[in-house]
Length: 525
View 1 (cartoon, rainbow, N blue to C red):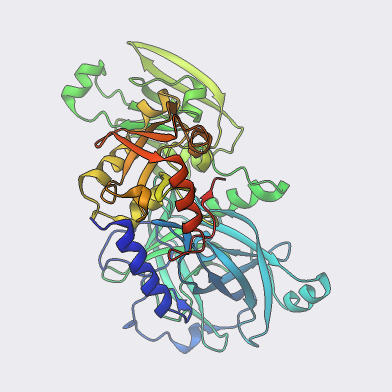
View 2 (cartoon, one colour; view 1 turned 135 degrees about the vertical axis):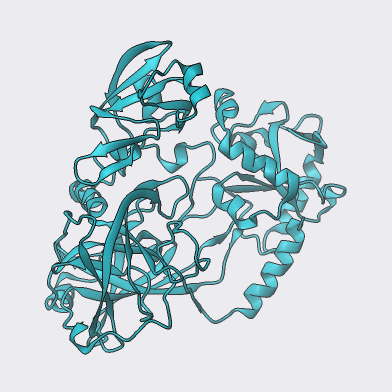
């Protein structure tokens, strides 16, 4: 297990040697199933496109982004800046549609006319990282904006694509020429986009995607209208995954009033009822369908509707749910029940759920909601902001997030595996009143932390006798030492740590602006 000190040292070496801005290049595992990464792997051996496929562009722009995110394991420090390049689709209202990942953690955005190279500063008007969509607008005066965008034609949406349709992948060449390749739509299903756990409608198709150096936000077009944006490309199998126009339409309708409510979610974990023994246990007969509710998320739509663990969901808004969790969609055929909530409905819409509970059929009604990232015990994603943290005498405390765990992968051993388990099973902590999971992420070498250098990745229960439900609680508790000592109670061994309150304050002052480049001892937002 790498200690925080080792990671800090490595971080300083990297930041000192990487002064030039890096250009982010999309990567994915060859031959892998699409995982929602929007940046496709482009096949460098793709066959040249015939001359007749090179057309005039009047709806696409190049988008250049400078970005800089925070290092999850060194929360006060930013990572090296980088650049992304992609395409933007000009739409009504002098707006530019792009994928959310293109503009994540952006510090500067500019639009570029493909033919002339003329550039214009831009800003994010709306973004939904769960749906992986964003809208950009000009960041300069109206006169200059109109002059820059005046030659572009807004592209309309094509929401009626179906299996068997021939679509086109649009890309821009070096001098702005439009390069078109074919894509045959072969499947419609639901799959994860970028954010873990966010499943939406996707198209899948067969076709080759060329390498043109603008692989973020590649539009998929049908009859000159936008059918979707490319999510992922598997070059081995020539399989393309597309973020479809119906999801784009949902996003644009949602933000039309100037407020981004997001996509609703049901907030349940469920399992299918295909196993015969399981069906007998549940009392399901014959061809009777339904999905077993194994958990209900605190604060979600399901809880508000009155769904309970052990219920069997029979239908949603009149759509019967089968034993696999699918329903018959009038447009696409068999689809996951998640699309009824995340694709066909909006936040605030009424939802009717029929369940089998204790052998009896019940009908539950209520309004759908979206559970915001900050409402989760463990924040699911973290874009455009830094992680919350607090340094006390050299001990580093953080609120647990999925990006923190993802940064370590499977390299953390048993202690980090314990935190990963908690992420997937938050019920007991939520029932105990935890708003966030505060954990000790490591210790910087100070007089206060002698002997604690190997203590990390342990959840904090109490400090100075006070229960810790978020970092605000920790901040308040550290203002009330007892007999000159801070007593920190942990969920796992060594169970209890002690800090001399006066020495901890001295160490805090020494850390500010010192070798570890700590500018602030806390970020609590």
